[in-house]
Image (cartoon, rainbow, N blue to C red; front, side):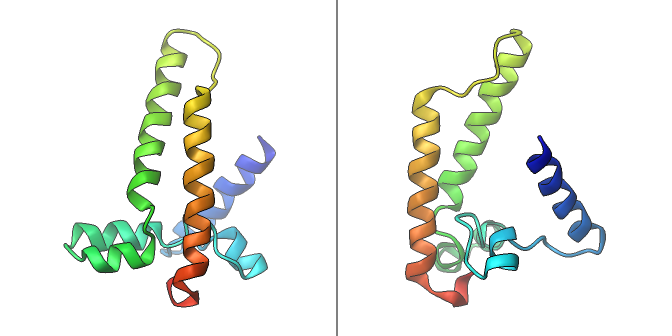
Length: 113
């Protein structure tokens, strides 16, 4: 919970000054996060720039789908008063997509971090 609170504080601080929050990994360690470029990727996609969207983050769509699925599972569990756990298949999907997305960031190069 402390890490989550710190992450929320990080994002709120940047959004309060009107900027997109940088990746914590990029800011402190100089390496990309698997989701780095996700916002720019989705904005490019909305504007019809499919190539630019792919370059910013080729996994933004799978990450968005996993986020929606996870949110749906957690909302249903909350409404049914069940334990808040994601199914194993969804945890495995998250791990696979995030590791692959992180490797893709290194392959695309620093221009797209």
